[in-house]
Length: 253
Image 1: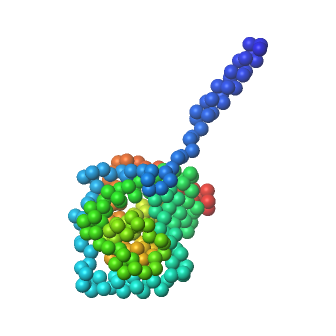
Image 2: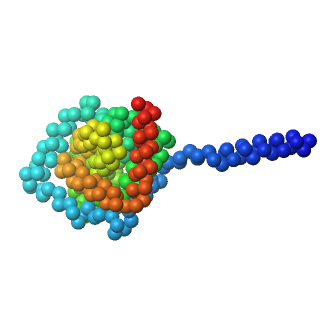
Image 3: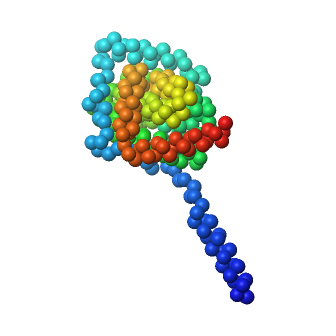
């Protein structure tokens, strides 16, 4: 091969290799709970829900009776559109779970176009587990469908019946996500916050939590967000995620 041709071929190969090296790698996400990312907080840096939550309603209290009445009344929603929405809102651990906020944000949530935001919201679930577990295990309130079997919007897996009902983790997560997303998209805050509330209410409709579990969950979610807002790693990812969301909203507008 002539020297000049060799030089041209070598330059082309080098250019191709450089382009490959510079090309961003496609993000790789988790698939479910087993390979879910850990949170931002560790050990004593996380709030302890058992230290700030009041105990769940006592067995004979007016609030407990109201919880049971609400549980019974919402069984009448079986088969309705709200029932189906509650079933859809059961998804929480997958990278695409924040698609629950699509309509509220006015976007189509795509993890591959929002990699930092996807990981940030996912890591928050890891933080939630750390924060809420002491209360769930300490109070161990039986779930409504365990105390009084009736229709639920999902088929409960065995682990769900064995886990505490108070506080509601889904409600905590939905409210925490709503607080974060409403700050990133303040012009959509009302719709985002309303969706965060509905995400928690779905647990009552579904029959897997009492209303007071949901209210306690929102307290946990708010406490988690307050703590994360002063975490340097979270702050860094928040800014990156906010820019990603802004770019996607402009592109999909």
